[in-house]
Image (cartoon, rainbow, N blue to C red):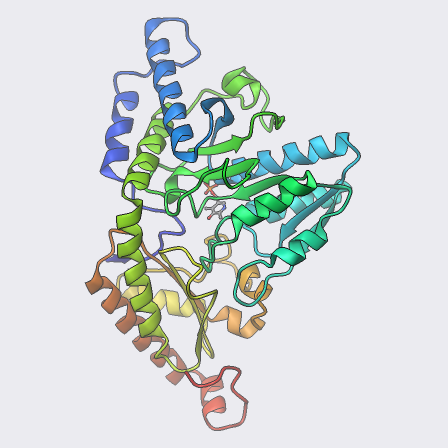
Length: 397
Ligand SMILES: *Cc1c(COP(=O)(O)O)cnc(C)c1O
């Protein structure tokens, strides 16, 4: 089997697993309990917080533990919206290619009377700073722009976005779920006010995440109940997962340069190989992208069918976000880039990590090339194109 779906989730590392074990076995106390086992758990929780804060370059009191990326995104956006509304500011700026955890929250806020500007996405998948700056108004309370896109992998100019937001006195949230553990993040230097990350995207366990909130940015609760997380997130902490997350983030940070170099070399080899398939196109800028993500559209094929063929060959891949696969909707990310609906249906995302090998990269190139050829041979629409009855959408090559 070749696993090339690391943007959906990653294999948990042995380091993360080992870090979790004590809290799945012997130390099962509740961090809120007075007794010694509770206090041991509490110490582990605060140790995890301190270590994560160190990696993001913030203070430990600025780290809030959540259940993952979706919850962090929801809480960050809802908190900023509430702060804005209290100040008479009901306008938010985001982009058209955010993750659904952001987009759907924005749509809810629109129904609640907020006005949201969805910035258009240039064809290269990197947002234009001028357009962002022009979208900010007197009544803007929040800018939420993802650090790196989960479908096409493009990395946004976060530092500059943070600077613009700071200059205009607007809060800046970034969904860094794809970036954390993969590219360097310094929340202070990048002027980030709110940041979301999720452990299972960097070889940690599922069900643990972080919301970084700069000191002075008041959060509001999504979940009411006990006084955990300084009264901001009720519920007994998922301690084993939180300890696994801290270990995974530290490990990812320590190996970042080496892993990124290895993964980016595989990525570039795959891009080079897949570009030889006629009538295909790479989605997103060639250089300003995460080390692990490759996304292509191939004219005249159905992405879902391609995935099934690849699966038969033991290859785990995706057509884009896990949320859109299984439904017959074209990816909102590819449509935002300006791809046609029919081209967007023919997308393939291969997302790699340091565990993938050069041999696997060659096998991926071979299998995708072969499967695309086979699907086209079997497609009447492709024959219509080949015989000139329908024009091609993409140029050769
Ligand atoms: C995976 C992902 C999320 C959701 O994270 P969960 O921990 O699965 O809730 C949010 N944003 C992006 C960019 C993601 O890739």
